Length: 598
Image 1 (cartoon, rainbow, N blue to C red):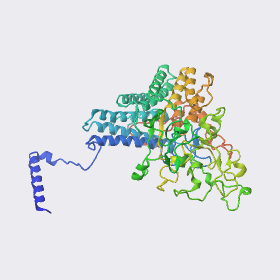
Image 2 (image 1 turned 180 degrees about the vertical axis):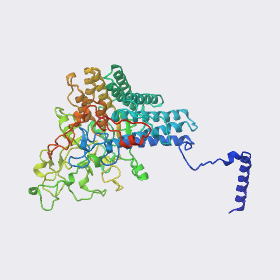
Image 3 (image 1 turned 90 degrees about the vertical axis):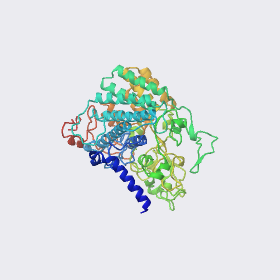
């Protein structure tokens, strides 16, 4: 060792020893700067902001998880979609449900983890010095929003739950459930407390006042419902929706990255301009989702980024919607009389590698590399579109129901096989192999698929942003609040704002019912809304009645009619069961199980 360095360090150590030697008690106290606990982890404000970012990551994993068979909040097992009928893990087979069932456990644990992260941010914000007080207020506001938002979700799904307002390192065994009403009131108070420090319009990925007022609308409706549609509470829901609408507007004309005929932009060899597009198509195109990108309908957007994926791997940087939602056309074979020498065994089973190194049988045109984990119910596929005229949400661009033969060696190359003709030409496909593909969830061409040129995306994943909430849903929430208050004219007007944009026939006061609103939510928000929350917060007979459209309960009909897996009843005011592990570990107090699960 360098002697000069050694000498200097010895002197420094001696000097420090002299400074502290006068206090033997202080000298003997153990100081473990290298061991971090929540109480000493925060030293600078950037650490708090890092924890804020982690809240957003945790939230994305709750709502848009990349785990197979757990995209549950958007409606797996409801009247919207599920795993295919013969899948062993089909969620709408409620004979498999109990207090140890995975779906309620996912929801309960993940929302409480989000609450714990929010509590950690609130603790850390008070432990460090901030150079900018507004930055501190913004961090606190985001944490209080997430805490309120999480309790709203828990109350909708489970009823009243234990409320915790602080982060703790030590186990606690005496939690008690608050009432459902008190849980909603707490959620409202937290979200309202966040508003003053938030911007009117969100930056990409973050929350702004629009998103908070949107969820306050939902939470006030949920509270009014358990108060027998209390008019004063519904007025607060309507007012909150008005706050959203004062800051945001529906997109009613074509816009953005694929709407400009003069554009010379090209991505993955695909021209930006899509001449056959419409405004609903544009809402979901890469580069169009953020408010900052000119989308005034956007309230809160999940950010996905391929460059981050390259750097850090799959940590919340993509959505695997093509894998989850798309069918498996590649596995369909011709009927024997349509098999041709030199051609492939099926219309879409092409053993050709494209320039990106991906297989043609997984092309964007047929939905990417789908494995059919989230399949629409017959109700969502067909019933809700009856009497909808030329609704652009159901046109052949936005819901692809028919597909051209893509094998150039077959005499039917280029001809379209439809829902009506698939059984004529093809050996009977399974329910997993032929059903509609939604362009919002599986792009129609390679404009929507980043990562192809690197060989790291075979059209399984999307790195396109996606909505957590947008203004069209706010209109449908306000329509519900107005219906509950008895204002059918106002409710119809709100629904017609959404239907008018979709070029669907407008409705009258007489058409407005809760069922109609629920159907309109599927038409507008398939794959977006938290469907379980919607049904369970409405309560009464609604969850049970709507679940009767699920894949595993109602006869699927169509291609593979089968005997229903489950024919029971969910009963009135159905709620998820409290996880049994939560009940069993709460040793010093009783957490009551929800009715029907004891």
